[in-house]
Length: 352
Image 1 (cartoon, helix red, strand yellow):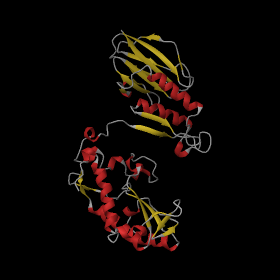
Image 2: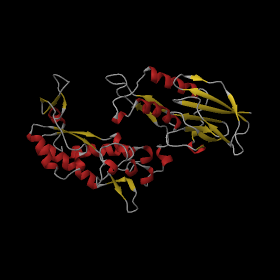
Image 3: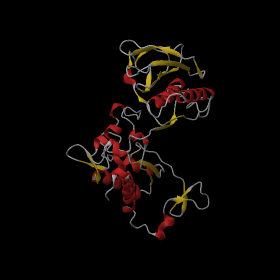
Image 4: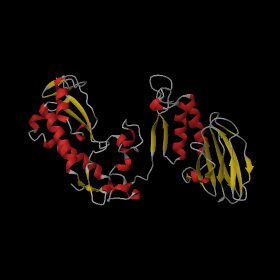
């Protein structure tokens, strides 16, 4: 199997290889044996059937990616079977320190997505064999999004998480394609913005609304508030009145600035502290600056030729302040300070 990474077939190849490994341990599986395999229960498809009989799947395990933790694996599965367990979840993840990846690592330190790493597949084969011997059903998950986050993602392993910075699909870590060729530089969508009132992993409502704006000012193609959950603002703000205000204001801003020709340009902001302001701009033509909670920064508008018109958008009220003409200093810099508390956005356009 020689997957073509430029057409994303290395991932398809990984799926096929996993399917092949499963079949390898089930060489006795033939068309006549189909009824013996795990499948929806014929008399009640809410449940499963195995070997022709209905079965309730019960399980628990110490890791999501059990195959990649071979030490003590047989004993762990024995404990599961001894208490009546018959089911595990196995992600094909290499997120933990010491876990091998599916692809071969060359002497150069880069991965070749056209070559497999035998150790990875041997570990999967061992897990499947041990589970087959104990009549344990294996749920295989090929892709887990946690594995493609940066290492500071809250996976529960502290600073030793292994994420995108160590992933073979990262264009910087393989010999098969560049970032431009991979398509990874294309649109980035944000379909679930958390930010609710339960704290901890949802952080806060305020943080959720700021993520909504940071996504757009960071160049993302979409930004969507996640559903509220079992109570008001539990997971996120959904389409609450607050969410509607932010969506409305974002549409008001992008109705004026051409976001599709602008780029994230935080380097144009001086005297900025962390999370104080964000800039989206087509230098020399127009600039947008988002302030999550007040603040004051200096915008480098030295590329602009002509007078600059400034308008402030009150995000919570979804209202524009009247336009005003602003003048840059001798270095082309403009000091910006929102006219009130809370979140604001500034739009500056060159008027010839």
